[in-house]
Length: 272
Image (tube, rainbow, N blue to C red):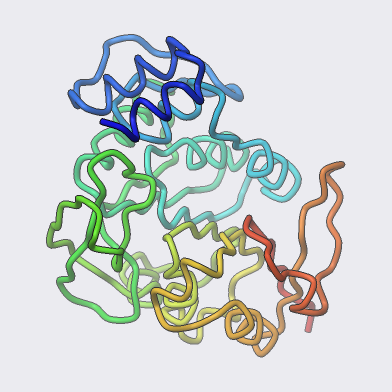
């Protein structure tokens, strides 16, 4: 209660914050929709939904990258799709392509399906699984009031719910789907980014663009660091870029330039 009162004071008793907190706690979806960045979202009790509604969760950088890179015939994978907001943006750009929207949390996956439906999107294939280095059944953890931070590994001092989910390697999934390439791969899996990349196996050579979350603190939960992830990408002939505030991309050649950085990076496959 003390933490909530402190946050309430910080938010200056914002009615948006009060309503968002109330919805998260009661866990009930409201029947109305709102529009953001050209897509419709249902008012579901999820952290990202309410963050976008309040203007406290930005997807500006994601939209810039999606608009800049995705072509109409692209095959896209959204690993860690959450409510599907970025999957929908990808699908609108890849109008003659496909988007595979991957989200393991059952509750959040239901929100994703609803958002796809209300946007009348027909080129998204939603898949309710986790991606990791091994095929099988695995434990997945979600926080009560922060489902955007759910992951395969969490700090268990916080309140969480554990569910068993199906986990597949990306190379296994590609074989099942009879696909031999990924044009655009987005990864936001709360620290398991390198596990997802390794799960591609030989298919890593068939990926054109990778838009991924770079947060050292999250990586440490999986016993690796940012340098190891960048070394993996370099080994497989990817150049890494950071998106500047003016929308341009600049090449990251030294890990030291990323010290204390938390955000998204773009990996681009170098031409042979």
